[in-house]
Image 1 (cartoon, rainbow, N blue to C red):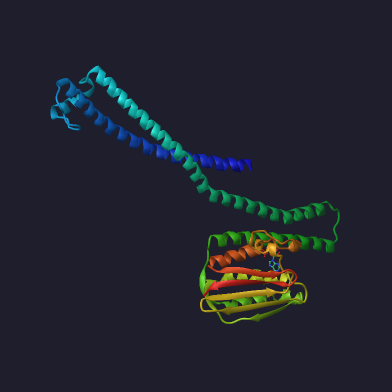
Image 2: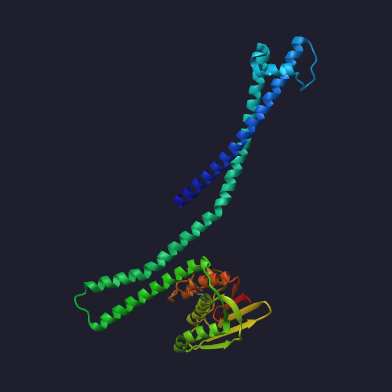
Length: 347
Ligand code: ADP
């Protein structure tokens, strides 16, 4: 926390310093020009007054006759001591005035620059904080299967003799951990890929794609004695096929995961003039109202689903896929009754 504060504080100060430096240079150039103009003006005026007094003539203001203009080249030597002192005093007064005005401007600009720098850095600070949390969460999730893998290997290496049956069981457990690691790394990679919007658009029939995913999940559904009913119509879209397949898989996988034995899942695909609506509904465990907003966050898992083998990344990826297709994803759910995920895509 302290290091983070320092990092952003120093970045803010550096940015403020750059702003002040830029404003300072502009002010310096301006003031020098203004000072030169003022001094030239004063020279003329002092000379006019000096000549008027010395020769007792009347010279109109701002009007210095040519011979006197010539004299102005050697201005400082052409005046009496008294005039020169007054002239230098006036010059110094101007210097002081400009110095004070510039100081005041720099002070105000400095304060504003500090506020502005803070505002400009805020999104970067938030993004860094999010990234840090993401890395922390990802490392935490990676550590669990890694630790279990390490412990299993260490313990079994110490054993003097292992029966073949037991040996196979150990390998199967190890494989499960490796599968979890592989799934997690794939998920993490997916998250960064969709973030970068690396999409390949092609024409597809969404109905066929949904059917393909349903067929893929059917064996798991049958094993859990779940029924999947579909009501699909032909919908032709231009989209990233692999990403949409992944989106449907995530939603269907969740529906299966969070629905108890003998439960039901409904999949419906409808359209109107502008939009396509994909609805995946189940009569599973449902989601508490206060968790509904959080389920799309990375690594979020509702309390009652902590025991499942998920990482809490599926819906974050789903939301990214929908967003990259300029669509919307919504959820309606009631604990104990079931959930419905609705994806709205532009035709
Ligand atoms: P996970 O890998 O945990 O399934 P997801 O990002 O896919 O991660 O889902 C986040 C959380 O949202 C899940 O842990 C679960 O609590 C809740 N959830 C998602 N889909 C459903 C569903 N169909 N029914 C009930 N809860 C769900």
